[in-house]
Image: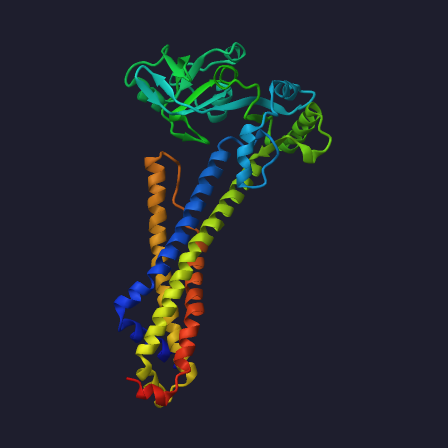
Length: 414
């Protein structure tokens, strides 16, 4: 009964100053909403990337140059490493070295824009094997054709473009046979992909696909690859294939100590784990930054509670005069602080959920991404737990100040 009465008294005290109570919890609302938004968007991004990785097939492996990154800041160095070259591809194609290798395709990334006539567009340009991409993603040209191994060997200046690239550069006109310019080099359009949107890692509508040999020689002037994609003959031989690849490349590069590898192999499972690690670290970092607003909000609550204690000194004296104990007074004011932060937490959770829902709708529709709304239940418990904890931590001092007041002096207070 005593706790029930204290709770009722606390609600009456807060309802007497509704505007002040609302402004007091604003910092808590913003902080909790931000944390909920970060966690929800982070989970949505994780689900999206994992789905895209899975779209490549469980038997797909990726070989990347450079040492295996240990954190998010290390991933950039793989683009500047030149350890994967043509001789490595030939060694890997040899069945004596990698008996369970089903297919292999090196890839390079080409930064820049594409132009035709007076129109310019900035798509995703990369050199790869068109046949490998088509078989892996099950995407074939709507009009025209793919380039083949002969075009790759001859370093042919040909391109297959996405539907959006075609519409941006050519409008309703036929793009087949026309020459587009990339870095002042002419490339003849031989195929146009259908409108498919996001397929695995690629937005097929915004792709310009070139033979990797052509992109290397004429656009980038390099003799190495940014990554090599491998398909094993079946998911059951993934581990064996990974080991064969490592043994072959170590032998080719004269590496005897595995810790000195100038390449690394990533499986689908490994890629998923890397993605989850990176997103978890970023989410934790951003949440820690946002937590500062919770501290500020907690300090604001403590200040307002101290003002409230001062204003209600006479009330405290009356309650003590009719039998309220120090514990009763402390419980009342502590409950007021916890109720304030708990209400702020609930409002923050609702606003955070609505914000993450809006973000998922924008990402899925405006940006043409397969992003679905994700709202982890742990975010709700975290929001409520953190808000209640803030109320306890920052409400203890004002509550103790109220409980410590002398009843006689409190009754004399004007």
